[in-house]
Image (cartoon, rainbow, N blue to C red):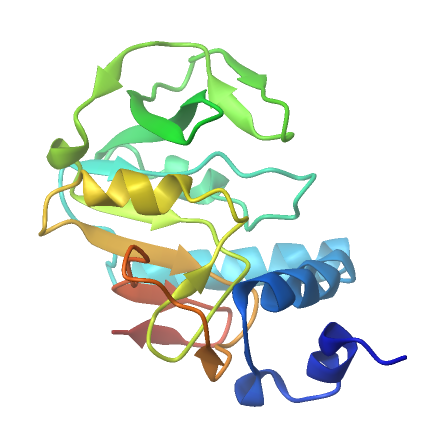
Length: 202
């Protein structure tokens, strides 16, 4: 029997219209098949585009600490630009969905949480409304700027607490799908998504 995800996989990405759960499964599978070289090349291209277009703005920037277990797009190169802005990183406070921003420094100790994601040991928090730009991890996104994350909802809840002027940037290995069909009112669309080939503004 052919599953929904198998049907989706047979289509070009830009024609996909599906619910988050199916898209998450599809793109987790696509991501797992990327080679180390493909991952590295995608990361370099995205960083070069980000730097050239001066997309990261403001004094305080939130960057995620990428997880090799999830093959997330590395943000290491963006941390290297911290001479140009201050950096904070996310830290999950409890399993009920609370996430805070912690001030980052180059010598800051970190640990790996139960999901295999690096988190700071520091408790030097910064108020969400003081953050100017948030770089958001994602599995995929659609042509309206909505994203499919890892299904926990941490970023959507955190972004609700940020300033209305905060700029949100997503990083994606893949081009957009046509439509995420089960977008909810609590889902906050991104302002910009950067792929290895394009910059999408919404």
